Image (cartoon, rainbow, N blue to C red; front, side):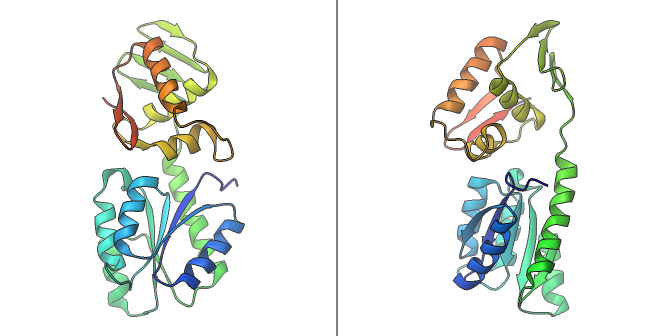
Length: 227
C-alpha cells in the first residue's frame, strides 16, 4: 500500500516522543508534521488538513482533550482520525477522549508494532470513506473519471490531465475547502516541484473552458467547489 499521500500530525510536548513516533511512521512512508502543544495543533491541522492526528492528552497551554474538541469543530477536519496518547490507563481518561471525538487511544510507553497496526487499520477505514466515484454529477456538469471526460449541457469538453484531475478533486467533495498543500499532494504528488502559481493557472483555465463559477477561491487557504 502506498502511504506517501497520507499526512499525519504528531502532537506531544516531549521531543523524544515526537522523534520516536516520527521515525517509525516515516519508515512506513507517511508524511509527518509535528507540534508540541494543543493550540499549535489546532492551527497546523487547519492548514495541512491531516488524515490522522496522534495527540498527547497531557500537554501545557492546552491539553489534548480540548484541542480535539476544537479540531472536530472545523468542518474541513470532520473526517480526520484522532488517536490519543496517554500515560494514564484510567478508564475516565479514555472515556473523556472518546467523548471529545477521538477514534482510538494508545498508552505510553508506546510499542511501535501496536501503533503502526492501529494507524493502518484506521487509515483503511478512512480510505474506504474516501473512495471517489467514477462519475460525478453536479448540476448540469458530469465528470467521468473512467473516460477522462467532462460533459456540460451535452457538450463534451476535453481537459489536459492535470486540469481534469484538479477539477475531479474539487468536485468530488462539494463545498469542502481544499488547502493548496492538499491539492498539490493529490494532483501533483509531493515529489514534484511546481511553482506557487501553478494551481491558480490551472483553475483559471478550467473556469475559461467550462465557464464555471462554482470554483471559489478561499483567500490564504485554497479552493472549493461550491454548490
